[in-house]
Length: 121
Image (cartoon, rainbow, N blue to C red; front, side, top):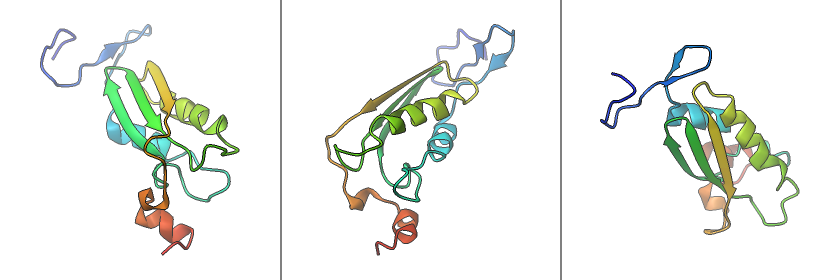
């Protein structure tokens, strides 16, 4: 496999240090996002259902996310925390985080683990 591969297989990218780094995987991006917690809820934002979409193209990762409410006090910090967490993954060269409001978040988006953690069964 080389950088001119036209197949849909991931292609490694060259870094200034001369090493080849594989592009990030969706699992790696999810794991990074899962390190970000809403400060008011003891559950990571992935389990809360705040992540609507993840798109990976070579080293660029695009994340669509929402917040639990438009007046969320963490509206500035959470997207930046996602950007920093995803940006620390080897192979990521750019991170774009977009906050969206449609569809609006509701508790049905929470995982069973998140509901259990906050006693919402």
